[in-house]
Length: 520
Ligand code: GLU
Image 1 (tube, rainbow, N blue to C red):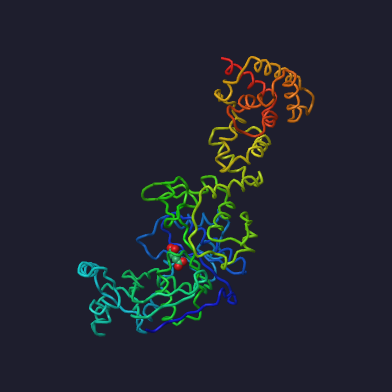
Image 2: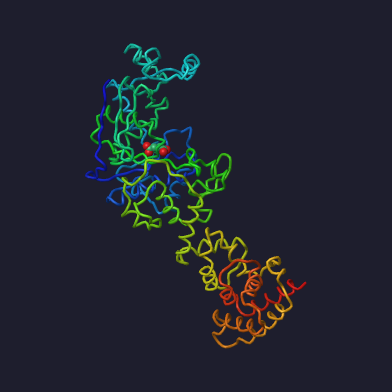
Protein backbone atom coordinates (compact mmCIF):
# COMPACT_ATOMS: atom_id res chain seq x y z
CA UNK A 1 0.00 0.00 0.00
CA UNK A 2 1.39 3.41 -0.98
CA UNK A 3 0.89 6.22 1.47
CA UNK A 4 0.71 9.83 0.37
CA UNK A 5 1.65 12.35 3.05
CA UNK A 6 0.86 16.03 2.90
CA UNK A 7 2.01 17.59 6.08
CA UNK A 8 1.24 21.19 6.85
CA UNK A 9 2.64 23.27 9.68
CA UNK A 10 0.03 24.62 12.07
CA UNK A 11 -0.84 27.38 11.08
CA UNK A 12 1.65 28.57 8.50
CA UNK A 13 1.32 32.30 8.14
CA UNK A 14 4.57 32.88 6.35
CA UNK A 15 2.61 33.12 3.10
CA UNK A 16 0.32 36.07 2.63
CA UNK A 17 -2.91 35.03 4.35
CA UNK A 18 -5.72 34.77 1.80
CA UNK A 19 -8.92 33.04 2.82
CA UNK A 20 -12.20 32.58 1.03
CA UNK A 21 -15.86 31.93 1.68
CA UNK A 22 -17.13 29.96 -1.28
CA UNK A 23 -20.89 29.50 -1.07
CA UNK A 24 -23.13 28.04 -3.71
CA UNK A 25 -26.08 30.38 -4.30
CA UNK A 26 -28.78 27.84 -3.58
CA UNK A 27 -30.91 29.44 -0.86
CA UNK A 28 -30.86 31.01 2.59
CA UNK A 29 -27.62 31.38 4.51
CA UNK A 30 -27.50 29.00 7.47
CA UNK A 31 -25.89 30.29 10.65
CA UNK A 32 -23.13 27.69 10.15
CA UNK A 33 -22.30 29.44 6.88
CA UNK A 34 -22.09 32.80 8.61
CA UNK A 35 -19.81 31.28 11.23
CA UNK A 36 -17.51 30.07 8.43
CA UNK A 37 -17.51 33.63 7.08
CA UNK A 38 -16.74 34.96 10.54
CA UNK A 39 -13.80 32.63 11.20
CA UNK A 40 -12.39 33.42 7.75
CA UNK A 41 -12.79 37.11 8.43
CA UNK A 42 -11.25 37.03 11.91
CA UNK A 43 -8.28 35.01 10.69
CA UNK A 44 -7.70 37.34 7.75
CA UNK A 45 -7.97 40.47 9.87
CA UNK A 46 -5.74 39.06 12.59
CA UNK A 47 -2.97 38.22 10.15
CA UNK A 48 -3.33 41.25 7.90
CA UNK A 49 -4.63 39.03 5.11
CA UNK A 50 -7.38 39.17 2.49
CA UNK A 51 -10.88 37.80 2.78
CA UNK A 52 -12.38 36.72 -0.52
CA UNK A 53 -15.96 35.91 -1.46
CA UNK A 54 -16.21 33.47 -4.34
CA UNK A 55 -19.57 32.40 -5.67
CA UNK A 56 -19.54 28.70 -6.60
CA UNK A 57 -22.37 28.62 -9.09
CA UNK A 58 -21.26 25.96 -11.55
CA UNK A 59 -24.16 23.67 -10.73
CA UNK A 60 -26.78 25.42 -12.81
CA UNK A 61 -29.47 22.96 -11.75
CA UNK A 62 -29.18 24.17 -8.14
CA UNK A 63 -28.85 27.87 -8.94
CA UNK A 64 -31.46 30.00 -7.22
CA UNK A 65 -32.28 33.49 -8.41
CA UNK A 66 -31.54 36.14 -5.79
CA UNK A 67 -29.44 33.89 -3.56
CA UNK A 68 -26.16 35.65 -4.37
CA UNK A 69 -27.52 39.09 -3.54
CA UNK A 70 -28.98 37.64 -0.37
CA UNK A 71 -25.55 36.30 0.68
CA UNK A 72 -23.98 39.71 0.01
CA UNK A 73 -26.70 41.38 2.06
CA UNK A 74 -26.16 38.95 4.95
CA UNK A 75 -22.42 39.64 4.98
CA UNK A 76 -23.03 43.38 4.89
CA UNK A 77 -25.55 43.12 7.74
CA UNK A 78 -23.00 41.25 9.86
CA UNK A 79 -20.26 43.74 9.01
CA UNK A 80 -18.19 40.96 7.43
CA UNK A 81 -17.60 42.49 4.04
CA UNK A 82 -15.11 40.77 1.74
CA UNK A 83 -12.01 42.51 0.43
CA UNK A 84 -12.47 40.84 -2.95
CA UNK A 85 -15.61 39.42 -4.46
CA UNK A 86 -18.22 39.71 -7.19
CA UNK A 87 -19.45 43.03 -5.86
CA UNK A 88 -16.19 44.90 -5.36
CA UNK A 89 -13.93 42.98 -7.77
CA UNK A 90 -10.25 42.45 -7.09
CA UNK A 91 -7.02 41.24 -8.73
CA UNK A 92 -8.35 37.72 -9.35
CA UNK A 93 -11.70 38.65 -10.90
CA UNK A 94 -14.12 37.33 -11.88
CA UNK A 95 -15.23 35.89 -8.54
CA UNK A 96 -18.22 33.99 -9.90
CA UNK A 97 -17.23 30.54 -11.12
CA UNK A 98 -19.79 30.54 -13.93
CA UNK A 99 -17.84 33.49 -15.38
CA UNK A 100 -14.58 31.54 -15.12
CA UNK A 101 -15.87 28.55 -17.13
CA UNK A 102 -13.13 28.85 -19.75
CA UNK A 103 -10.45 28.32 -17.09
CA UNK A 104 -11.32 24.83 -16.05
CA UNK A 105 -11.30 22.61 -19.17
CA UNK A 106 -7.59 23.08 -19.73
CA UNK A 107 -6.80 21.67 -16.28
CA UNK A 108 -9.18 18.76 -16.76
CA UNK A 109 -7.56 18.00 -20.13
CA UNK A 110 -4.11 18.22 -18.57
CA UNK A 111 -5.15 15.66 -15.97
CA UNK A 112 -6.34 13.34 -18.77
CA UNK A 113 -3.06 13.83 -20.63
CA UNK A 114 -1.07 13.02 -17.50
CA UNK A 115 -3.09 9.87 -16.82
CA UNK A 116 -4.89 11.16 -13.72
CA UNK A 117 -8.28 11.53 -15.31
CA UNK A 118 -10.25 10.10 -18.23
CA UNK A 119 -13.16 10.74 -20.56
CA UNK A 120 -16.32 8.85 -19.70
CA UNK A 121 -19.02 8.50 -22.35
CA UNK A 122 -21.55 6.48 -20.36
CA UNK A 123 -25.04 7.86 -20.79
CA UNK A 124 -27.24 8.46 -17.75
CA UNK A 125 -29.32 5.46 -18.87
CA UNK A 126 -26.27 3.20 -19.00
CA UNK A 127 -25.25 4.30 -15.53
CA UNK A 128 -28.76 3.72 -14.22
CA UNK A 129 -28.64 0.21 -15.67
CA UNK A 130 -25.34 -0.40 -13.85
CA UNK A 131 -26.87 0.78 -10.59
CA UNK A 132 -29.66 -1.72 -11.07
CA UNK A 133 -27.24 -4.59 -11.59
CA UNK A 134 -24.61 -3.68 -8.99
CA UNK A 135 -25.72 -2.88 -5.44
CA UNK A 136 -23.89 0.20 -4.05
CA UNK A 137 -22.48 0.86 -7.49
CA UNK A 138 -19.49 3.17 -7.41
CA UNK A 139 -17.78 4.58 -10.51
CA UNK A 140 -14.27 3.73 -9.39
CA UNK A 141 -11.43 1.32 -9.57
CA UNK A 142 -13.65 -1.80 -9.26
CA UNK A 143 -15.96 -0.85 -12.13
CA UNK A 144 -14.27 1.62 -14.42
CA UNK A 145 -12.53 -1.22 -16.28
CA UNK A 146 -15.72 -2.31 -18.01
CA UNK A 147 -17.51 1.00 -18.50
CA UNK A 148 -17.53 3.21 -21.61
CA UNK A 149 -14.53 5.43 -20.97
CA UNK A 150 -11.19 6.32 -22.47
CA UNK A 151 -9.39 3.88 -20.18
CA UNK A 152 -11.04 0.99 -22.00
CA UNK A 153 -11.61 2.38 -25.49
CA UNK A 154 -8.76 2.62 -27.94
CA UNK A 155 -7.19 6.02 -28.54
CA UNK A 156 -8.83 6.09 -32.00
CA UNK A 157 -12.26 5.23 -30.66
CA UNK A 158 -11.97 7.89 -27.99
CA UNK A 159 -10.79 10.48 -30.51
CA UNK A 160 -13.60 9.67 -32.87
CA UNK A 161 -16.23 9.92 -30.12
CA UNK A 162 -14.79 13.26 -29.08
CA UNK A 163 -14.62 14.48 -32.71
CA UNK A 164 -18.27 13.55 -33.17
CA UNK A 165 -19.12 15.70 -30.18
CA UNK A 166 -20.38 12.72 -28.13
CA UNK A 167 -21.58 13.84 -24.72
CA UNK A 168 -18.95 13.02 -22.13
CA UNK A 169 -17.62 13.94 -18.72
CA UNK A 170 -14.08 13.91 -17.36
CA UNK A 171 -13.53 11.86 -14.21
CA UNK A 172 -10.63 11.73 -11.82
CA UNK A 173 -8.88 8.35 -11.72
CA UNK A 174 -8.65 7.64 -8.02
CA UNK A 175 -5.91 5.08 -7.34
CA UNK A 176 -6.78 1.82 -5.60
CA UNK A 177 -5.22 0.72 -2.30
CA UNK A 178 -3.72 4.01 -1.18
CA UNK A 179 -4.20 6.19 1.83
CA UNK A 180 -4.53 9.92 1.41
CA UNK A 181 -3.31 11.83 4.44
CA UNK A 182 -3.51 15.47 5.22
CA UNK A 183 -3.20 17.62 8.29
CA UNK A 184 -6.25 19.58 9.23
CA UNK A 185 -5.58 22.51 11.52
CA UNK A 186 -8.42 21.49 13.81
CA UNK A 187 -8.43 17.73 13.44
CA UNK A 188 -4.73 17.03 13.04
CA UNK A 189 -3.83 14.07 10.83
CA UNK A 190 -6.75 12.87 8.73
CA UNK A 191 -6.54 9.90 6.40
CA UNK A 192 -8.78 8.32 3.80
CA UNK A 193 -8.67 4.93 2.12
CA UNK A 194 -8.84 5.61 -1.61
CA UNK A 195 -10.77 2.39 -2.14
CA UNK A 196 -13.75 4.19 -0.65
CA UNK A 197 -13.47 7.24 -2.89
CA UNK A 198 -15.21 7.20 -6.26
CA UNK A 199 -13.98 8.64 -9.52
CA UNK A 200 -15.73 11.98 -9.14
CA UNK A 201 -16.77 13.89 -12.24
CA UNK A 202 -14.49 16.90 -12.73
CA UNK A 203 -15.93 18.36 -15.90
CA UNK A 204 -19.57 17.88 -16.77
CA UNK A 205 -21.16 17.25 -20.15
CA UNK A 206 -22.19 20.91 -20.37
CA UNK A 207 -18.52 21.92 -20.11
CA UNK A 208 -18.96 23.27 -16.60
CA UNK A 209 -16.58 22.04 -13.93
CA UNK A 210 -17.98 20.32 -10.88
CA UNK A 211 -17.36 21.78 -7.48
CA UNK A 212 -14.35 19.45 -6.96
CA UNK A 213 -12.36 20.73 -9.90
CA UNK A 214 -13.45 24.34 -9.61
CA UNK A 215 -12.66 24.64 -5.91
CA UNK A 216 -9.12 23.35 -6.39
CA UNK A 217 -8.39 25.39 -9.52
CA UNK A 218 -9.71 28.58 -7.98
CA UNK A 219 -8.07 28.10 -4.60
CA UNK A 220 -4.83 27.73 -6.56
CA UNK A 221 -5.36 30.62 -8.97
CA UNK A 222 -6.59 32.91 -6.20
CA UNK A 223 -3.60 31.99 -4.02
CA UNK A 224 -5.71 30.83 -1.09
CA UNK A 225 -3.51 30.11 1.92
CA UNK A 226 -6.05 28.61 4.35
CA UNK A 227 -9.31 26.92 3.38
CA UNK A 228 -12.00 27.13 6.07
CA UNK A 229 -15.14 25.16 5.47
CA UNK A 230 -17.72 23.09 7.31
CA UNK A 231 -16.95 19.56 8.44
CA UNK A 232 -19.54 18.28 5.96
CA UNK A 233 -16.92 18.85 3.24
CA UNK A 234 -14.42 16.51 4.87
CA UNK A 235 -15.43 13.50 2.69
CA UNK A 236 -14.58 15.58 -0.39
CA UNK A 237 -11.11 16.37 0.90
CA UNK A 238 -9.33 13.25 -0.50
CA UNK A 239 -10.46 14.13 -4.02
CA UNK A 240 -9.18 17.67 -3.55
CA UNK A 241 -5.87 16.54 -2.08
CA UNK A 242 -5.33 14.19 -5.03
CA UNK A 243 -6.12 16.99 -7.47
CA UNK A 244 -3.60 19.32 -5.83
CA UNK A 245 -1.03 16.57 -6.20
CA UNK A 246 -1.96 15.60 -9.78
CA UNK A 247 -1.99 19.18 -10.99
CA UNK A 248 1.51 19.60 -9.59
CA UNK A 249 0.50 22.31 -7.16
CA UNK A 250 0.91 20.57 -3.80
CA UNK A 251 3.50 23.08 -2.56
CA UNK A 252 0.80 25.75 -2.87
CA UNK A 253 -2.00 23.76 -1.30
CA UNK A 254 -3.88 25.75 1.36
CA UNK A 255 -3.92 24.57 4.93
CA UNK A 256 -7.23 22.90 5.68
CA UNK A 257 -9.56 24.00 8.42
CA UNK A 258 -12.72 21.89 8.66
CA UNK A 259 -14.98 23.61 11.16
CA UNK A 260 -17.10 21.60 13.59
CA UNK A 261 -20.79 21.24 12.84
CA UNK A 262 -23.43 23.28 14.57
CA UNK A 263 -25.68 20.71 16.20
CA UNK A 264 -29.35 20.55 17.12
CA UNK A 265 -30.05 21.70 20.70
CA UNK A 266 -30.12 18.08 21.91
CA UNK A 267 -26.80 17.40 20.19
CA UNK A 268 -28.34 14.81 17.87
CA UNK A 269 -27.10 15.71 14.42
CA UNK A 270 -26.60 18.81 12.36
CA UNK A 271 -28.91 21.76 12.98
CA UNK A 272 -31.22 22.14 10.00
CA UNK A 273 -33.73 24.73 8.89
CA UNK A 274 -36.42 22.19 9.74
CA UNK A 275 -35.23 22.06 13.37
CA UNK A 276 -35.64 25.82 13.53
CA UNK A 277 -39.20 25.59 12.14
CA UNK A 278 -40.00 22.80 14.57
CA UNK A 279 -38.51 24.43 17.66
CA UNK A 280 -39.47 28.01 16.84
CA UNK A 281 -36.18 29.75 16.19
CA UNK A 282 -34.44 31.07 13.09
CA UNK A 283 -31.57 29.21 11.47
CA UNK A 284 -30.95 31.66 8.62
CA UNK A 285 -29.16 34.97 9.10
CA UNK A 286 -31.90 36.98 7.42
CA UNK A 287 -35.37 36.31 6.05
CA UNK A 288 -35.17 34.21 2.92
CA UNK A 289 -37.98 33.95 0.41
CA UNK A 290 -37.78 31.01 -1.94
CA UNK A 291 -38.47 32.50 -5.38
CA UNK A 292 -40.13 29.29 -6.60
CA UNK A 293 -42.51 28.57 -3.74
CA UNK A 294 -42.78 32.10 -2.36
CA UNK A 295 -42.25 30.59 1.09
CA UNK A 296 -40.42 32.87 3.54
CA UNK A 297 -38.11 31.48 6.20
CA UNK A 298 -37.51 33.77 9.12
CA UNK A 299 -34.05 35.10 9.88
CA UNK A 300 -32.23 36.41 12.93
CA UNK A 301 -32.20 39.96 11.57
CA UNK A 302 -35.95 40.17 11.19
CA UNK A 303 -36.44 38.61 14.59
CA UNK A 304 -34.83 41.71 16.04
CA UNK A 305 -31.33 40.43 16.52
CA UNK A 306 -28.51 42.97 16.54
CA UNK A 307 -25.74 42.04 14.09
CA UNK A 308 -23.06 42.46 16.77
CA UNK A 309 -24.91 40.04 19.04
CA UNK A 310 -25.35 37.57 16.20
CA UNK A 311 -21.64 37.68 15.37
CA UNK A 312 -20.62 37.35 19.03
CA UNK A 313 -22.97 34.40 19.54
CA UNK A 314 -21.61 32.67 16.43
CA UNK A 315 -18.00 33.20 17.47
CA UNK A 316 -18.64 31.12 20.57
CA UNK A 317 -20.19 28.24 18.66
CA UNK A 318 -17.07 26.11 18.62
CA UNK A 319 -14.51 28.64 19.83
CA UNK A 320 -13.60 30.28 23.14
CA UNK A 321 -10.58 32.23 24.30
CA UNK A 322 -9.87 29.86 27.20
CA UNK A 323 -11.50 32.12 29.79
CA UNK A 324 -15.09 32.60 30.95
CA UNK A 325 -15.50 35.72 28.82
CA UNK A 326 -18.51 35.60 26.53
CA UNK A 327 -19.05 39.15 25.33
CA UNK A 328 -16.46 40.17 22.75
CA UNK A 329 -16.36 43.19 20.48
CA UNK A 330 -15.27 42.61 16.91
CA UNK A 331 -11.84 44.08 17.71
CA UNK A 332 -11.42 41.70 20.63
CA UNK A 333 -12.47 38.76 18.49
CA UNK A 334 -9.90 39.71 15.88
CA UNK A 335 -7.22 39.99 18.52
CA UNK A 336 -8.10 36.79 20.38
CA UNK A 337 -9.26 34.42 17.66
CA UNK A 338 -7.01 31.44 17.05
CA UNK A 339 -7.64 28.20 15.20
CA UNK A 340 -5.97 26.25 18.02
CA UNK A 341 -8.91 27.16 20.24
CA UNK A 342 -11.59 25.97 17.81
CA UNK A 343 -12.97 22.73 19.13
CA UNK A 344 -13.16 19.51 17.16
CA UNK A 345 -16.50 18.55 18.64
CA UNK A 346 -19.76 19.87 17.21
CA UNK A 347 -21.27 22.89 18.95
CA UNK A 348 -24.82 22.53 20.27
CA UNK A 349 -27.06 25.45 19.35
CA UNK A 350 -28.82 26.84 22.40
CA UNK A 351 -31.50 29.37 21.51
CA UNK A 352 -31.88 30.57 25.10
CA UNK A 353 -28.19 31.41 25.09
CA UNK A 354 -28.54 33.08 21.71
CA UNK A 355 -31.30 35.25 23.20
CA UNK A 356 -29.11 36.12 26.14
CA UNK A 357 -26.46 37.55 23.81
CA UNK A 358 -29.00 39.77 22.12
CA UNK A 359 -30.39 40.95 25.41
CA UNK A 360 -26.89 41.90 26.56
CA UNK A 361 -26.23 43.81 23.37
CA UNK A 362 -29.55 45.65 23.45
CA UNK A 363 -28.85 46.63 27.05
CA UNK A 364 -25.58 48.24 26.12
CA UNK A 365 -26.60 49.58 22.70
CA UNK A 366 -26.49 53.30 22.02
CA UNK A 367 -29.98 54.66 21.41
CA UNK A 368 -28.79 56.13 18.12
CA UNK A 369 -27.79 52.67 16.89
CA UNK A 370 -31.11 50.96 17.50
CA UNK A 371 -33.67 53.71 17.23
CA UNK A 372 -34.07 53.45 13.44
CA UNK A 373 -35.27 49.85 13.61
CA UNK A 374 -37.47 50.52 16.64
CA UNK A 375 -39.06 53.49 14.88
CA UNK A 376 -40.01 51.17 12.04
CA UNK A 377 -41.79 48.95 14.55
CA UNK A 378 -43.68 51.97 15.91
CA UNK A 379 -44.66 53.03 12.41
CA UNK A 380 -46.01 49.56 11.74
CA UNK A 381 -48.18 49.98 14.83
CA UNK A 382 -49.55 53.22 13.38
CA UNK A 383 -47.91 55.50 15.95
CA UNK A 384 -47.12 58.99 14.63
CA UNK A 385 -44.29 60.39 16.70
CA UNK A 386 -44.61 64.04 17.55
CA UNK A 387 -41.70 64.10 19.96
CA UNK A 388 -38.46 62.35 19.15
CA UNK A 389 -36.93 63.18 22.52
CA UNK A 390 -39.83 61.46 24.28
CA UNK A 391 -39.38 58.36 22.12
CA UNK A 392 -35.66 58.22 22.93
CA UNK A 393 -36.32 58.49 26.65
CA UNK A 394 -38.87 55.68 26.46
CA UNK A 395 -36.42 53.51 24.55
CA UNK A 396 -33.71 54.19 27.13
CA UNK A 397 -36.16 53.26 29.91
CA UNK A 398 -37.24 49.93 28.44
CA UNK A 399 -34.28 48.62 26.47
CA UNK A 400 -32.95 46.59 29.33
CA UNK A 401 -36.19 44.65 29.31
CA UNK A 402 -35.94 43.74 25.66
CA UNK A 403 -34.52 40.51 24.31
CA UNK A 404 -35.38 41.45 20.73
CA UNK A 405 -36.00 44.87 19.21
CA UNK A 406 -39.52 43.62 18.46
CA UNK A 407 -40.15 43.41 22.20
CA UNK A 408 -40.25 47.19 22.26
CA UNK A 409 -43.96 47.36 21.53
CA UNK A 410 -44.87 44.80 24.15
CA UNK A 411 -42.70 46.56 26.70
CA UNK A 412 -43.53 50.13 25.82
CA UNK A 413 -46.90 50.44 24.08
CA UNK A 414 -48.41 52.06 27.20
CA UNK A 415 -46.09 55.02 26.72
CA UNK A 416 -47.85 55.80 23.48
CA UNK A 417 -51.39 54.61 24.13
CA UNK A 418 -53.26 54.45 27.43
CA UNK A 419 -53.95 50.83 28.38
CA UNK A 420 -57.31 49.66 27.14
CA UNK A 421 -57.75 47.13 29.88
CA UNK A 422 -56.23 46.47 33.29
CA UNK A 423 -55.01 43.29 34.89
CA UNK A 424 -57.90 43.39 37.34
CA UNK A 425 -57.08 40.00 38.82
CA UNK A 426 -53.74 41.30 40.03
CA UNK A 427 -55.46 44.07 41.99
CA UNK A 428 -59.07 43.29 42.84
CA UNK A 429 -58.71 40.55 45.45
CA UNK A 430 -56.81 42.94 47.71
CA UNK A 431 -58.68 46.11 46.84
CA UNK A 432 -60.31 48.16 49.61
CA UNK A 433 -62.16 51.44 50.09
CA UNK A 434 -59.08 52.73 51.87
CA UNK A 435 -57.10 52.20 48.71
CA UNK A 436 -59.70 54.01 46.64
CA UNK A 437 -59.44 56.91 49.10
CA UNK A 438 -55.66 56.84 48.86
CA UNK A 439 -55.65 57.19 45.09
CA UNK A 440 -58.30 59.90 45.13
CA UNK A 441 -56.10 61.90 47.47
CA UNK A 442 -53.01 61.04 45.48
CA UNK A 443 -54.67 62.69 42.47
CA UNK A 444 -55.09 65.87 44.50
CA UNK A 445 -51.52 65.76 45.74
CA UNK A 446 -50.23 65.24 42.23
CA UNK A 447 -52.51 68.01 40.89
CA UNK A 448 -50.72 70.29 43.32
CA UNK A 449 -47.31 69.60 41.87
CA UNK A 450 -46.94 72.68 39.77
CA UNK A 451 -43.47 74.05 40.39
CA UNK A 452 -41.10 74.00 37.42
CA UNK A 453 -39.14 70.73 37.41
CA UNK A 454 -41.07 69.25 40.35
CA UNK A 455 -42.71 66.49 38.30
CA UNK A 456 -39.81 64.16 38.76
CA UNK A 457 -39.34 60.68 40.07
CA UNK A 458 -37.98 61.18 43.59
CA UNK A 459 -40.52 63.88 44.36
CA UNK A 460 -43.43 61.79 43.09
CA UNK A 461 -42.25 58.83 45.13
CA UNK A 462 -41.93 60.94 48.29
CA UNK A 463 -45.43 62.30 47.89
CA UNK A 464 -46.73 58.78 47.31
CA UNK A 465 -44.98 57.34 50.35
CA UNK A 466 -45.88 60.13 52.76
CA UNK A 467 -49.50 59.85 51.80
CA UNK A 468 -49.38 56.09 52.30
CA UNK A 469 -47.88 56.60 55.73
CA UNK A 470 -50.49 59.14 56.62
CA UNK A 471 -53.21 56.72 55.55
CA UNK A 472 -51.51 53.88 57.34
CA UNK A 473 -51.27 51.64 54.29
CA UNK A 474 -48.06 49.92 53.34
CA UNK A 475 -46.63 51.68 50.26
CA UNK A 476 -45.69 48.27 48.90
CA UNK A 477 -49.35 47.32 48.67
CA UNK A 478 -50.11 50.40 46.64
CA UNK A 479 -47.27 50.20 44.18
CA UNK A 480 -48.61 47.28 42.21
CA UNK A 481 -52.07 48.83 41.73
CA UNK A 482 -50.39 52.08 40.72
CA UNK A 483 -48.33 50.23 38.14
CA UNK A 484 -51.40 48.44 36.78
CA UNK A 485 -53.16 51.82 36.50
CA UNK A 486 -50.39 53.28 34.38
CA UNK A 487 -49.32 50.24 32.43
CA UNK A 488 -52.31 47.91 32.36
CA UNK A 489 -50.25 44.99 33.72
CA UNK A 490 -47.52 43.98 36.12
CA UNK A 491 -44.51 44.93 34.01
CA UNK A 492 -42.44 47.88 32.85
CA UNK A 493 -39.69 50.08 34.24
CA UNK A 494 -39.81 51.88 37.62
CA UNK A 495 -43.32 53.17 38.14
CA UNK A 496 -42.43 56.76 39.07
CA UNK A 497 -40.21 56.97 36.01
CA UNK A 498 -43.24 55.99 33.96
CA UNK A 499 -45.27 58.80 35.57
CA UNK A 500 -42.55 61.28 34.80
CA UNK A 501 -42.41 60.23 31.18
CA UNK A 502 -46.13 60.12 30.45
CA UNK A 503 -46.62 63.40 32.38
CA UNK A 504 -48.92 64.71 35.02
CA UNK A 505 -52.10 65.02 33.04
CA UNK A 506 -51.85 61.50 31.62
CA UNK A 507 -50.92 59.99 35.02
CA UNK A 508 -54.00 61.51 36.66
CA UNK A 509 -56.23 60.53 33.76
CA UNK A 510 -55.06 56.90 34.03
CA UNK A 511 -55.56 56.77 37.81
CA UNK A 512 -59.11 58.08 37.38
CA UNK A 513 -59.94 55.63 34.64
CA UNK A 514 -58.49 52.69 36.59
CA UNK A 515 -60.33 53.61 39.77
CA UNK A 516 -63.61 53.18 37.92
CA UNK A 517 -62.51 49.77 36.68
CA UNK A 518 -61.19 48.66 40.09
CA UNK A 519 -64.30 49.70 42.00
CA UNK A 520 -66.96 48.50 39.57
N1 GLU B 1 -19.21 25.60 -2.60
C1 GLU B 1 -19.06 24.93 -1.35
C2 GLU B 1 -20.28 25.30 -0.50
O1 GLU B 1 -21.29 25.50 -1.06
C3 GLU B 1 -17.78 25.38 -0.70
C4 GLU B 1 -17.07 24.34 0.09
C5 GLU B 1 -15.62 24.77 0.27
O2 GLU B 1 -15.44 25.82 0.90
O3 GLU B 1 -14.74 24.12 -0.24
O4 GLU B 1 -20.24 25.39 0.70
